[in-house]
Length: 390
Image (cartoon, rainbow, N blue to C red; front, side, top):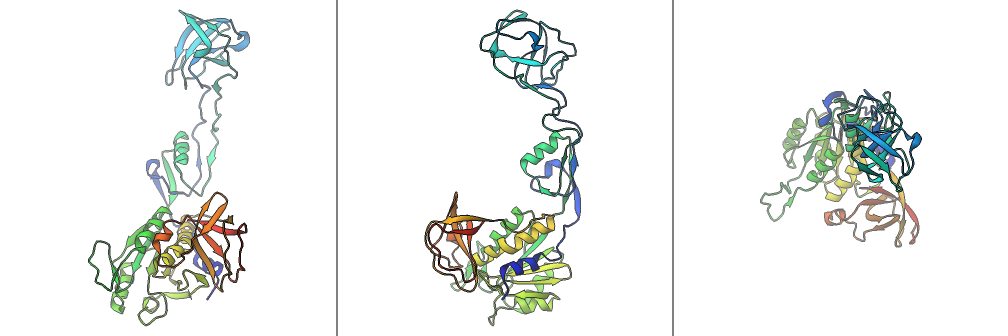
């Protein structure tokens, strides 16, 4: 058995970002930006009013001062004249501030009588003007790589970028194996169970930026497994679930090797997830996950998702480790790293009492994994331990 860190390093070894493609900005949500984008213009492109009010030269601004209103400007409808002292332009939020004006008095701070306004005693502070380029200049660049958030898309749109260069989504083929499995909605026999973890893994990988194919369940025999590997051809990552241990009916390792996959390791010093295996068929990695639902999902967080992120160009693909304070005592850990389902609230973390690798109902309550290193001594309430958000 090899340590978790070594297994993660082997999973990521040799992985590089996939090819790029140019897509419309409207389709870029969640995609990995692969090339920097430089603004086509500054934002705002002109000094703009931040409020509804009156644009003036502030040299004579004071409570009781009067100004003559000589025109009006609205967003998208600028005014081309010039403001002199004692004059005012009715202006609305987003409209260009005219030449000669350096202050916008908000409409609540004046009294208007025909074409004359009088400044009230409630005059507020500040010019109420957004300077040209206050948000970003014409040379502003959004750097890559970065996963594009909704805020990024709004920024890129403001930069007048209608297309972006992104990394192609990695394709993942999921192969659930086992005579005992039935797809949801089927009619399982008394000795069968519903295939569940492929749906969780699909959702995880797609949320990380992959495209995922769920292949037909492969029965526990060589022809079925050989067909499954043939169907997975062309995927950037091939993932099997189940059949990864060393029992008489766990045939995936042999089937993978018959398909030309060279195994890098088989079994890691971790729970849940000891039977994990990694192999390669040329450049395409093969990841063999345990069949127990929680084991598969935990290994998905620790191994599959980092592989997806690395192929997208993420420079820090491993899950972020933070620390939190235990709310209760824990006994000593054994020889394998233990990734305990737990719930964190602020700076506090509470591992669940039940840690069986078949209990999906516990996993749904967890929002993190509490990490116990091999041979970690007993811990008391208040001790700080490593956690990974899930």
